[in-house]
Length: 174
Image: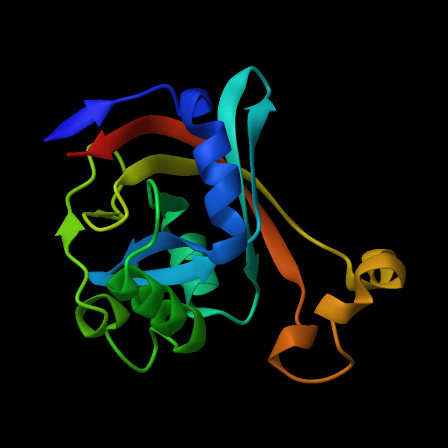
């Protein structure tokens, strides 16, 4: 069962969960992927509720969002179980190009109401989002302050794309 919510009533829960990780799901051509994110912003832009998700341009999640323009944000409520911590670690360290991270982590998908990417039962606070704007962050413009996130070489040197997702539905899976 899904209980519809106002996402701003859960802003503190989302902000507290982000540093430890929440899951972003994406889907295209029947491929569902979950990626751990630790950065995100909940707010209002252009008069609508928005979640901004930051995804590196080399990630599989980036490819899926580019194809569909949709994602879900799935956050825990309360303390993380050992299984949830393991799922976050797996989804943050492996690529969906190589394995089915959702199956490997033992997560259960719940069909979303409006967007294609599913919700996740184990991370019940769900924001269904449709991309209304995206912008690639320019590394040279932010590296003087946040250079530790962009080393000169390797996967972490790739820029993030900020996806502004209009929250088209928000609920808690019960």
